[in-house]
Image: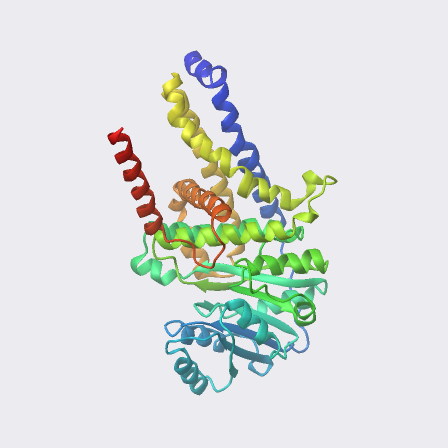
Length: 439
């Protein structure tokens, strides 16, 4: 016993310094946040219904969405929100497929919906901006055309607005659809499902309490109409237009941005690693753009209290020591560091990350009690907790690559596909190897 104690506590030295980075920067803050969320949500406040639900406008930007648009409009039709107070605007930004015919079919079938279509310039941000001026609702709600609403989502979101007059904008909870997972789900998709649940029903819940939400999900967000129309609207030149809008409302307009945990929007699960690679790089590049634009708010005063500083440290600064830490695992073996000691430190940190995932899992289950079917399905996937740290590490590597690519390439909506980048790396490796052989 004394041997193991001496090995783990007194001979880690330099290696222990690197091990403290994830513990202090991520694990301890995440555990504290999870415990606070569990306590806070133990006694939820009831929502009061107004005498009449206000008029709302649901904007659906569409680009080549013939496979998903009908299901999206069908979910709006099945919503519990009063149809006479619901306007739906489909904003088609130059689709080249059969999207218009799908819209026409939906218009004929859902005759109780105030359903209309406008044709806009290309680009999602442009489509949303133009649709805003056709909206007549007191509240504006954006949803993606490749997802479906939970029946009570619109009602729950508007109730939160009506019960909190100071709330300027809300984002809903995004989860992946369960049926594809039940039928043909693979490991990556189960991890993504778990990740979305923990990101929204744990991480963003805490951010929302302190008006520190970093990004409203563009897939499902809502605004008071007067607020969004006094903003600069969506930035058509940015790939992080949802993050930009979040910062506009909170920082420029001094409004409140929150999360409606019981307003759920279901999206299709990610198909493969290549899609995850492209998606997460795009998110990271968009975040870098917006942070750069609003970096003038980062002053010396209140440096450690500024939530954006902490977010930068976690999502950007600590990505570099993570990668160094990974490379050091190999390099330190050549300096005769004990493989047993390094292996034990990895195991300990991995177990701590599992503990964080477990507490986040409890937070999600607590908030999903209103949705028995979703609660039951999420509870059955407890085993994903055991591999979530590995999935999160893969996502961290992709974000790190996204940071590097944002420094060396021009920003664009679509990043270089994973397969293409691997081919480029292999090509460079073979060329360098060939050059070394000729010397």
